[in-house]
Length: 110
Image 1 (tube, rainbow, N blue to C red):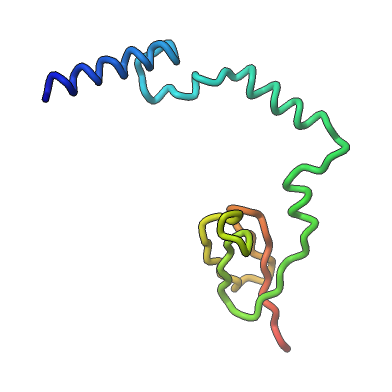
Image 2 (image 1 turned 180 degrees about the horizontal axis):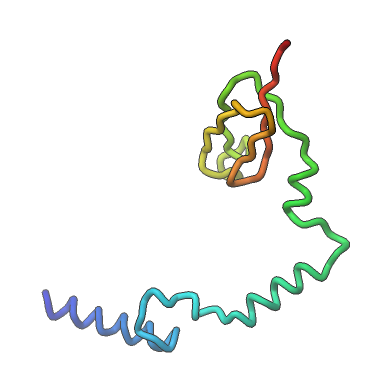
């Protein structure tokens, strides 16, 4: 059994060398070249006719909530949302969800 595990480890090392040019398994970012990433980013940024996701989410007004704490899931449909985040609304300025960027503010009834 130990020989089988060593042989599989050797095969994995050889596979990593073939993919990344290194046997270091932490070097997975080498699989996608920085040239591809840079060209993709440039392609996204050159089209100024479309709004970026951050610009689109900033157009959504802050959501008013009665309670001190809100649970953000990103969407009503769990398949389209994100992990639940509980956000405290004690501050005066809107609180921002770290996953989707939605803003929440406590609606004071004064």
